[in-house]
Amino acid sequence: NIRVPIFLLHAYQDQQTGPSGAWLFNHLSDDVSKRLLISNGHHGMPVQFVAHRRAWFDFWLKDQQSSSFPDINDSDSRVLAFFEIPNGSAHRNTPLRSSDFPLPETQWTRYYLDSTNKLSTTPPNPEDESDADAYEVVSEAADDQLDRVEYRLVFDKPTAICGPAVVTLWASCSASDTDLFVLLSDVAPDGRVRHLQRGMLSASHRSLNKQMSTFAKIKGDRVLVRPYHTFSNPQPLEPGKAYRFEIEVFPVGHVFREDHQLSLSISKPPHADPVRYPKGKKEKITSGAYKYESRQPSSTVTIHSSPEYPSSVLLPLLPSLP
Image 1 (cartoon, helix red, strand yellow):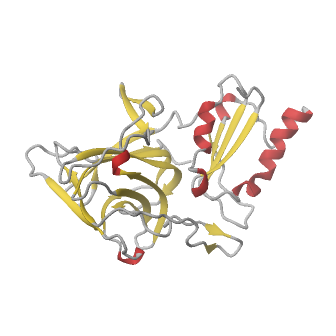
Image 2: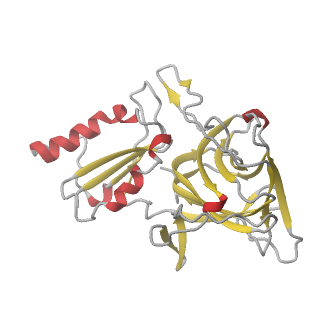
């Protein structure tokens, strides 16, 4: 019911907000002037965009048009997506301007988890033997002892993603419930790892609310791009039976350099959140900014990747670099 111009700032890695700021944009009517500025960072990020906020208020409250922001009320620039924001520096990339979120120009691309622990656009071959990976859930395991399975995608040229991702996981468990934690990371050629974004789901809460979920048209098909779970009436697992889980990975914007790899890992939730961000002029890295508490019993979780159970991840690739 908001009928006034509204300006939203949203940081991808902002743990405490869910990140729901980007989705709030969709709940505002399209006939209301609105702008979404999205960026890597945390909820201290708005201090880096004071000029944007001031220009917005000057335009709507004082009827003053800033020469630096001529598109302040342009419907094709309702979304400003930033990808690299060096802290303590006035330099930042020129934003990618778009009309909506998720970005209409997104090239949604599905990658399947394969038997060689890679991500491939090729679906599992019916002639191949069924393949599965497994990890152990140890209730009191320290984060550096966490068991996980991992799948990687190598980029042979710079590639950008912007938006939500969905991990469609076919998995079975030796217990009646487990907490699934998926993590997207950038792995550099020298082995350095930057964790980008995550998603999580208790297996017993796999039931979807399709009316509240978000879908996109992909080659004429209606495809799920943001699952919304009911979180009511939990259904225990039958141990050993394969179930389908749709896991929301919160929106993220990132550029993978040439020969960098995207890593998708699956495990129980760690104690300390692995997604960290630069903080302060000296680029100190925060640690333990958010905590997870999973009290599921010890078990074995098996991830399936076969024609019958084709586990995959849907990524929001951009057609060109921002």
